[in-house]
Amino acid sequence: MNIKTALVFPLLVIGLLAGAAAHAEGYLDKIKARDKLIVGVFSDKPPFGFVNEKGDYVGFDTDLGRRFAKDLLGDEKKVEFVVVEPASRIPFLQSDKVDLILANMTVTPERAQVVDFTNPNLRVAVQALVPEKSEVKGLDDLARKTTIVTTGTTADIWLTKNHPDWKLLKFEKNSESLQALANGRGDAYAQDNLVLFSWAKQNPGYRVLAQKLGDEAPIAPAVKKGNVELRDWVNTELANLGKDKYLLKLYDQYVRSQLADGTDPAAVIVEGGAWKP
Image (cartoon, rainbow, N blue to C red):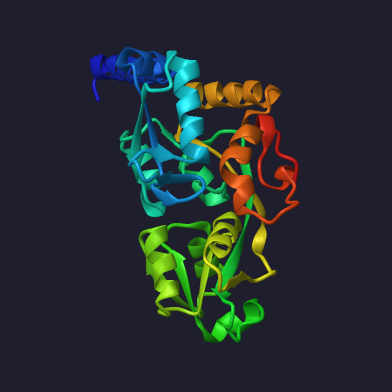
């Protein structure tokens, strides 16, 4: 490297870093210039993200995305929903297909290395669903059974890591996994307990095992790694919405009827982003 190159190269690096910083800092301006917030959501995971009989995207997460668009862009209709599967949530962020993921993504140390999570909006634990007449009484019984999981979910990751000897049957979509259980292709389905409670209530003949796979964990919106500006905006937004108990309103609209009578909303939602284990 000659003297001229040695002098120019550091300036080039500084320029590239400054450009990247400017891009990151101007992300809200980018969304406003586009006049549209692009959000990754589920289409088959009621009551959080699903398509109703009219073909509209609805649910706890989906309506939260509309509220974000309203407060950022002045109109809740200025949102584009992109359907994601559990395994595609992170790649869609990394490839800039979406600005934000609102698809029931549990915060884990592994995921936090590749995306930035905002403050939480929900809390969840992983449990297992079995047919009512199943001989399975607890998690230990599943060691000799076939457990269905959806690829890329916390259940898939946890079981693969902690029980590599268990037989897992994997599907890409939540709806495919539940249909596989209904068809008897597996003995149990491991998934976020809120989804399982909803399924068991809507489909008599199933029960949720009491034991949990791992500890209770927060669920949070996610942005691309390094997108501090959008992450901080969402955190401020969640704090402001918490003052009006907005998540409780969404809970009452979509979630309450799906759970057992007497369920404490504080055991499900994290109002204002204030996580308390």
